[in-house]
Image (cartoon, rainbow, N blue to C red; front, side, top):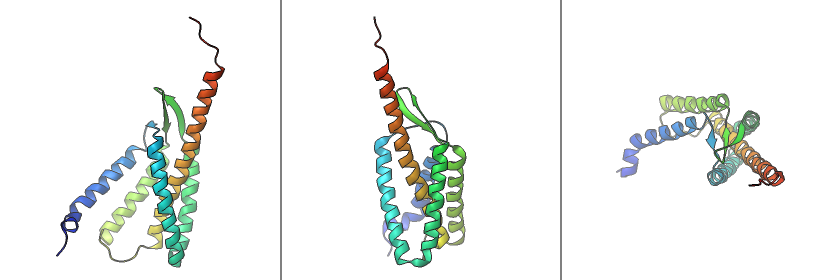
Length: 174
């Protein structure tokens, strides 16, 4: 007999997936507030996932090429995205405006692979993931790792520039 969680999975897994996809799409457009704690937490999780993918590549050599190519492509996309990201102060908060085209392309990649997997294999597929699936996953992981670390560097630089400019400004006399 299936557990209640497993029995209801066909209902809540797609709903949860759509919520996560909606959040990802929303983060691709417009000025986004910089949240250093959330970014640090996300970075920690991504490092753990990247480490697990490295271990997977070591134990399943047929996936290693897909993992490696995906990681390199993701890192290059992350660097390109950082080049086209604008950081600024808005309302005394650090913000960044990501490039919507790069984020949109990665979201389309994710949605396309999810749709393919759902229509051809179903979410409860019992076969192991392919090198293509793992390559796409590492594109997203590599991109996210490079992008978050790059944003952290840019935000520290932005804060240091503001501190230096306020320290060098002459005092205002009343």
